Structures are given as C-alpha cells and as structure tokens.
Length: 228
Picture: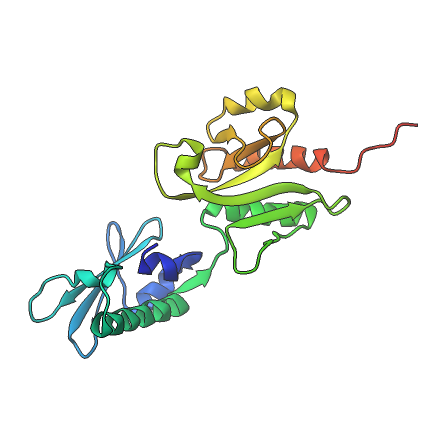
C-alpha cells in the first residue's frame, strides 16, 4: 500500500471541495500542484474518475522526480522529513476535500443503505481497526445473512488485480449453478460453497438482482417455522 492509498482508503472526494481547495478539473479527473518544504519540492497530485489519488514530488532545482518518496527501502532523516511533510499535506486534503466512506465500491454502499432501509440493520465490523470485513445479522436469530469482504481480485480468479468487495449471501443449493451463470456471481469465497454465494460489488449485477439475493438470504436465516 503506497502513501496515497494509506491516507485515502475509504475516503470519497467531494468535487465542490476539491475545486475550492485549488484542484483543477481535467478530462481524467482533477489535478493539483503546490510547493512543499519552503519551495524545495513541487507536489503534483492527480485524482482519476474512479477517485484514486496518485502523487509525485519534483525537486525544484533539478526538475527531477524525487523517487525516494515512494521507495520503502529509502531511509534516513531527510527522506523521513519529506515523507512526513507530504503525509501532512495528504491528510489535510483528506480532511478538507473528502468524506469517510466505509466501503470501497459505490454498489456496496447502496446495498448497505438498502439493507438498513429494508430491514433496519447496519453493518457490524467484527474486529477493532478492521474495516475489511462486515456482517449484517438477522435480528430474530442473530445469524449472518450478508457478509462483506474486501479481497484481492485474484482470489476469485478474476483477470484484474487489486482489492475488490464482495458480499456473501446464503442461497438454496439447488439454485447455485443457475446463479453462477450470471456475471458477478462467483463460488463463495471463504465460506461453504454449496450454501453460500459471493457477489462482486462492481455493478456487474444490477442492484435489483443483489437485493433479490439478499432477501433470499434473509429468509433462509430467519427462524424456522414450527411444524404443527
């Protein structure tokens, strides 16, 4: 994880705030330049249309990129001072121009809002300082009916790289193969592959399709009706 990812993970940029801070709109997103450490360096930041932040530092005298900023092996008092000043700038921008968002993907956020509106349940983050896993519990049974996991795309045999978000839902095993024919449905990661299904939160599946599967999972984790 690089410095920008560390600061801006789970942060969503607010365009109006970016413009007020001094970011300039571009075809690819937004760009920002400023001086650092008494004009010794020039900071160049970019935010792409997906909200990902990247940054470079350039030496004013030579015009060359200061690559040690992003080289973990580079150590010493000077590079530490530069990194600290750069991080302070990033953190200020995060406070001024971004808002906290617990999920990486917009679709995950929408599904969380739908669950709360439909069932009254909020995501429960199970471990302190860990926002990579969340569950939604059935109020009557305490059972999980939806589990959000952030995982490397390669773990689900996807061609891309990087972190993705999935929501695991409980299903009728007889419907599993039918569901797997849909783009965005995968054999369940980290849980029973017969009874659970992983849904990729990248808009491969429509919100309506995911909501239907969430509803099915909610019913399957509800109290069993007693037979008279």
